[in-house]
Image (cartoon, rainbow, N blue to C red; front, side):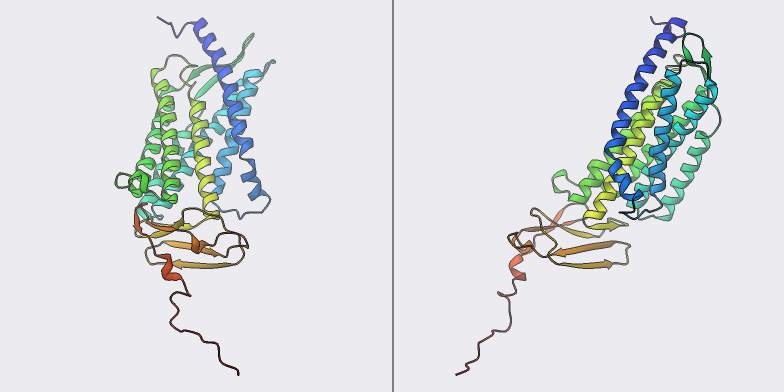
Length: 349
């Protein structure tokens, strides 16, 4: 049986930890670079910046700073203040975990039309989460000749409580989002595009964040040694940040490209075309805001020469849960077939 507390095993775990962190750093840099065009659209002013994106940018860049600090701690060859370096890593790493949960909870608030009881509940949960994340210095590190910076001790009780809290938080926002979308009552084949976007993308990301924090909590509670107790913390932070940022990017991109729905998804109706692409030969915008807090914005397009007109395509109308409720008869909109007045050319002779 493995003696997890032996110096040899701790040294081996430390070497594995260092290699693992380099792999995770490469993974996150790849994710970071491939999504930079989205960031640049707001930095350059091409798209309007809105305040919820503060949490998106902060979480995204804080984690990058933490991973750079970890890489420095693992590769430094001269004596440095290891405790200060790991304190820096812990602050930025914990902040990225908290910001990821905020980004996910903001999506849940939007699904619930920012209902005051949902917002109040989640804000209280967020404050409790941050009180644990900023509790204090939970890691002790020192310079060891021949090894470099090494973790010597961890406050497992507080770390475990922090990740259990994060796990429960992610589970709550997952359940709230799923409940509001009526997952149990919607068949997979009948979901509309917006429901597919929120359910298949959004809820899967919530599940990934929950599982990542669950794994980190298990390692923390096992308390095998100082290294193994925190080996899953960085993967949990990276997974939570990546999925939370992808949720923000996907929904932001969707609302700027197609129909926009803000507030409750109940008692609203959206129509989506099944196929075809149209050029903006002409455009008419219509905006309607009903009493239930649903804002539906639509645009009608004129077909460019040589393209198929929207009137030639079949449209299917869905409700908010994605069920087909009506297939309009497009012939009814044929102005020539339904003209009430017959026009006759006058006889000029």
